[in-house]
Amino acid sequence: MIDQFLNYLRLERNYSPNTVEAYGNDLREFELYFNKLEGHLSWTTVDADVIRDWMESMMDRGNTATSINRRLSALRSFYRFALKRCMVKSDPAHGIVGPKKKKPLPVFVKERDMDALLDPKMWTADYKDVLARTILILFYETGVRLSELIGLDDAAVDFVNNELKVTGKRNKQRVIPFGENMAQTLKTYMKEREQLPARTSEALFLTKKGCRMSPAQVRNIVKKQLARVSTMQKRSPHVLRHTFATAMLNHEAGLESVKKLLGHESLSTTEIYTHTTFEQLKKVYETAHPRA
Image (cartoon, rainbow, N blue to C red):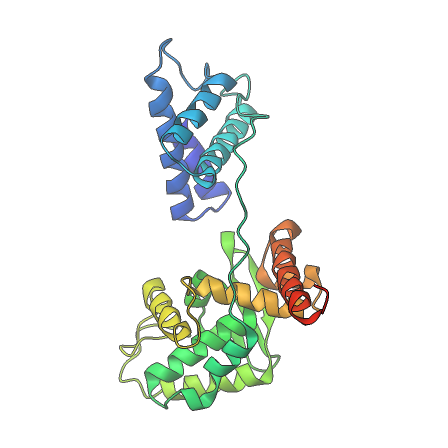
């Protein structure tokens, strides 16, 4: 049953290999749990109490609410699939509520710090510097995910309309506009890239050896460069995605527009950035108002 479900995710829902593997691990962990219980339980005889006991056992072992809810989500998806295909007569996961988790506010870089970091005076004409600055600007001005940036090919850049075609989660594509400054930055980078001795990929961002960049290489660039202007512990590409969204909302962009640019499926995912901007507003008020 697990294998049929994973094939469904892989072939029909077009889930990524990592997601499919994670679902499989979660389901096999639950299977291992109920196989140890008395009563010779199976996927068809498990009830809601068994699932609640499983969740409680995970909490006792110190698992976070996030990891427990992720496993519960995998179980819900599995039973919905099994019920629709008449593999089970009922869905024991239906209606079970996972533990509440705290939602930390997104970490972002202040605009003045980004302006200081991206100042051309901070950079040399060396390929490594041109590459790093271009990556930072693209993250900051488009809000793309790390996987989306790495997946960009030259063909994704439209200099006529100043648009970027991005392939996001589940192979969904979206188009992101960009400004003239970023267009010039990309053209300067691509001209510098022509000096590389060899090229083995059509990727937009290449290492000095002409290969598509890996996630680790991009993470290291972002971490190293953000350290120049910030003491934050988190200095990842996702922080720049948060920075993009926060900057857009601070400059009066509509929530629905930001949602589309980020490629979010639900508006509730984007709404967390309104909390960030409100927290910033509170700090301004507390600093500026004499009676605050």
